[in-house]
Image (cartoon, rainbow, N blue to C red; front, side):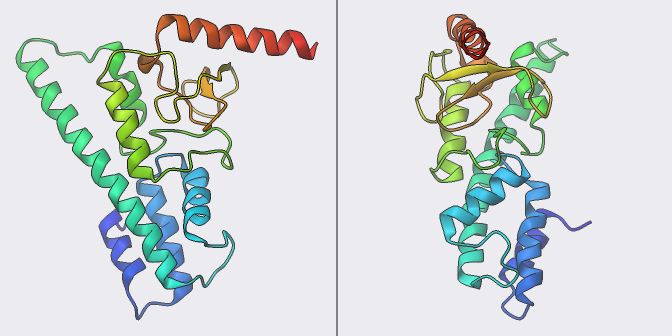
Length: 203
């Protein structure tokens, strides 16, 4: 099975068939897709002017999309290296089992769904690397009351998420499933309350 870098070389290969180069970019998303596969593809297509079903897109657009994905992957790999170093220190100090704070990292191992978007067509508009930078910074800071990506406060609790955990806070602004550790207990309670109010108004 080809790795991310091997697939990236295929995307860049000027001698390659355009359909294969596009396919290789899609395969890159099986290795690294911050919003989830479909939402990340939708994001890249929208930002770089690629028709999602075009089998022979402009190669320059494909490469620009790949470069955005690579920049985000570099941000994530740096975070994972720091995470691994922290865990080594914790194990050395006798803390063998990760804390609940690290549950989010365990579920996003490999870089898939880091900022998972439940609706593939609703995702942040900023470059992927910028979005991941904001999210990682929030994970290293004190919990807040707003979405770390778009600073929106319209966060609602969903109980029908399509991946683990099946419940959680979703930003109605940018569409990401907000990692629980970045939100205060009050913000989480308000998100649950927003869901209850939405159900009551629909009844």
